[in-house]
Image (cartoon, rainbow, N blue to C red; front, side, top):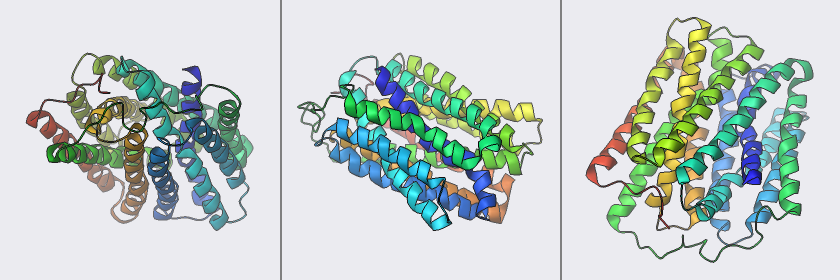
Length: 386
């Protein structure tokens, strides 16, 4: 279990390292907000494509090999990106990094689903907490070091945990080299009817809409704090870290609630409660109030992840484990990939206030979809699905 949590922390660093250094990349490459968002879109787009392919592959190929190679590739690509002599070379190297990053979540979600059939809320909450804790530490440490060692040093430092975990997975028995016999089928044969498929698509669409809003704002949060809320670059890093402070608390709370209540209802309510904390950013408030808003944003935004991961297993019973979580990660990452470019373009054309209001609308639509699922049929149980 420890190696799974540590690996998650090492991998999650790569999801937020580019947003952290984005204000400096704007200056280095003389980028507009739209162009900066497009870098994140490319990075996340490659991650999305890789997640779908790797998820399906992981039901047939040794997960030990996939995880080890993915960690080493992501560490190597990010380190070399710091020394890229031009923007095209930088984009190529971050694309290779993204391919390595894409290997972890589909594989590890499938492993957790197999190994822990009970108390999934508790396991998923601690799993998400391990990732949030690592990201929080990264923002605090790199926020201090960014102005001292520069982008190259920060990218290299962020790569070290992944390199160590990749070697650990390759040289140890932390991940079994052989697949379990029921990995590809989810442990039982299940034929989905038309209603099952429609509910699966509606659920997947709902969580994609959530990540379009949350992912866009989170990826641009350092830029928002620096360029619109008058934070210094180092202070923006610390400010963004409070998202993950709230995220840790939200994940732990969600884990407790998921095992005792209806996860689908909790997910719909949590998504709805993200909206007020998003709107806080456009209000003329003191810095400490914006920091509290960031914490609330993280609390409900991260709590959603625990609920959706538990529910996805039930909505996708007709798919293999790795395939189901690979599709989920791919779909969510596509949402994350598109959203920074859209938010960047929106900031360029419509300004900060209008853009934040616009990006709260997908959250409302997402919540309404999930409430519809809740009303039209009994929710899928959280545990014992396979």
